[in-house]
Amino acid sequence: MKGTPRSKSHAGVLGAVDRVGAVARALTATTDGVEALRREVVSTAAAIAGDGASAAMALRDDETSSLQLVDSHEAGTDAFKGWEALPEVQAGRRTARTAAGGGSLLVLPMSSQGALVGALAVMTTSDDSPFGEDVEGVLAILASNAAIAMENARLYEVERESARRLRELDTLKTDFLSTVQHELRTPLTAILGLSDLIEMCWGVWEDALKLEALRDIQVAARNLDGIVETIIDFSAGDGEELTLALASVPLDEAVQAAVTVVGERHKGGLPIPDEIEVEPGLTLLADPDRLGQVLRALIDNAVKFSDGRGSMVVRGTRADAGTVLIEIIDQGIGIPADDVPRIFERFFQVDNSATRRFGGTGMGLALVKRVVAAHGATVDVDTGVGSGTRIALRWPGPAEAPDGIRAEDPMGSSVPVQ
Image (cartoon, rainbow, N blue to C red; front, side, top):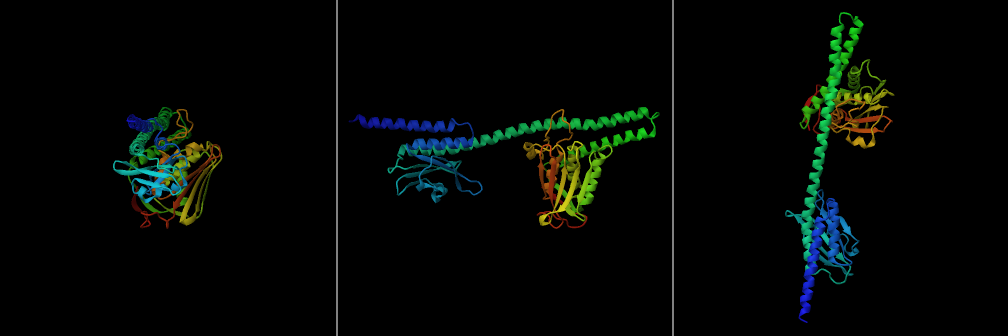
């Protein structure tokens, strides 16, 4: 008779040890991130609570600062649905309830560094409360340590993603330096080679041949100037405020000037037909120089990736809400769907191999994105492999300047923009 209580006590201790062991396994056996850890904790809580029990977890939502249900193990009872919205649960207090039709609810707060991060709930359909002191104690240990473990797992994921991104940026930087070296060397080689050739053949060449070589030098020099301009503009403003000298700019004149400059970078002008369809008298609010950069970069891309096929159209129309819609449309090779979200990242190029067919530094579209955003405008891409590309800019008109941007006089005003 005297041995029975000791046996029961011994069995209770062993049961508690097993439960604590389950807690340790739940927090250490999962290496698949925060979500997997949450599922493991919820499943372990249900197992600790006993047969027929279910469990759920709610976590703090950063936007609403309220607890929101994120995971549940089995369905639980209808009587306890919405437990995460109970005022005492939202306040981070331990909560125990018994349903009129049978069943019990136990909610334990989850805190990390003194702040409430969530709550762990266990539910049962049993008429008798299944939560003894040892069970409740182990569940409290699970809730407390789960909060710390999940925060550590979240920080680990953040660090891992940061490390991955740094490796990716390092690779992009290496590829960029290699690309710039090649892009700078190509026009420089043409300039130096043709200059030497003119010097060698000056006495024997006719004027027509000399002029032809001079035109080739000019084309190479303009290409070199475009590359250097993009690099300087992007690197000089990277991470700093972009200053805009705003004015009302006639779109037709800006497009004509951009097409002319891009044409001068090709021997004999643009290699494909171009069409300019801008509504008469259409103006927009922009820094004229920055707008020119955007148009030149987009027109240059349209021409380059047309690969000598089809034509290029630059269209300007009045859009809704006083904005201007600018479209640059080509019939070229298009962009793979997986690469579209990344084309405005600096250094990114769809084809970055050493044998790629099309030149470029991978900075032009990144600069476009930054300048467009600074003006309060937007840029969208509609493309498909083999079906060409349509770039659509929605730009504020003179009367629709975004907050913090306005032209104070016809000559423009300098406005720093992030």
